[in-house]
Length: 443
Image (cartoon, rainbow, N blue to C red; front, side, top):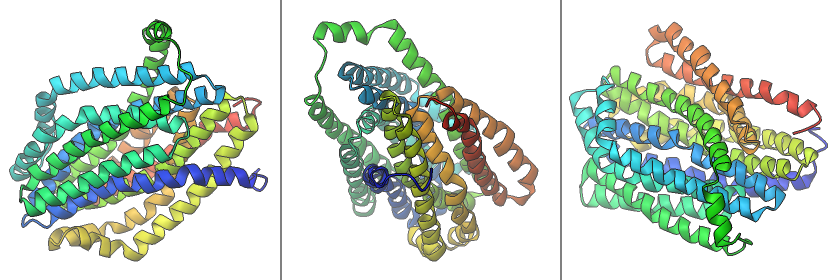
């Protein structure tokens, strides 16, 4: 199977994945710029505060990543069937859910901030800066949720150029404003937060323009059909059920990253700052490899919608090959330039020393994590949310937490050992669940 994959499939994977890899890399680069501009202030607690605040926001936002995933899978399958009505309804339902969640989160934002800070053992200085950051940053969450829906819809249509432009514009906005507000205006933590909020809404405006452009290419249902389908209970319940399972999966995943940040905070300001630097690199790996996952989501979903079993299998195997190639490249980059990259982010000597000590764990991550990203993409494209949920619950409860508990005497090493083991287990468990569909008669 591996050797019989046509060159056209490989070209399609690269054509879909490369734009998303390049644009996705801009997302963690944003976090790196935050860390760079804040990391060169005179105290570690500024970086620690932004790291803690960012972890809370990322926990909330990526907990809602089910909006992008479910939208991509359903849109890709409708695209394979060439059903413009379902394509439009999928977007409309996703935007409705984003609106409801946004109102809920804005209403409870003060309680969320208080709860997050109550759960951390970080120093008073770190908590104070995190609270300042969050009081501003939380206002950008609604735009982020709407952007998830738009991004997932565009990816499902295999329109990778539009999502690439959306992500790049958002993050260029953020980087420029970060430097302007923090370095030139000297607004500190407040400036970093304000830059992120403005960039989110700039991206939303651009994303809506992309949606309108794409809608002009579709044969849309009548206004009466739109209203009827928009609130059709069976379709809404089906979407909510799919989103529920992906939500549980995303919640578990974000809890592991929050666990890393909060446990690192209990080790001291320098450790939370050092882990923040390394977690930025982990996000770099994750978002880059997600580019391949996005490609396989769109290809697998379309193949299932078109009932193309051969295309289904070829998409999966070709994606595994290219994901392995990209993981080798990322590991080589961290091996050769890791220390220089750490020093670029912060010139606080103690933070620098700690981050370099734990850098080998990061070099290992592309190998342990690459497989779970590809298989996530397969299950999203196939809308097999229950399997994703069950796999994640198993890996968190039976792998991540026991690994940390058993090795907790190793301090910060235990956190990074648990993360690597967890990522590897995710890939293996999803592969085990996927194997019957590759051997059977249907995708």
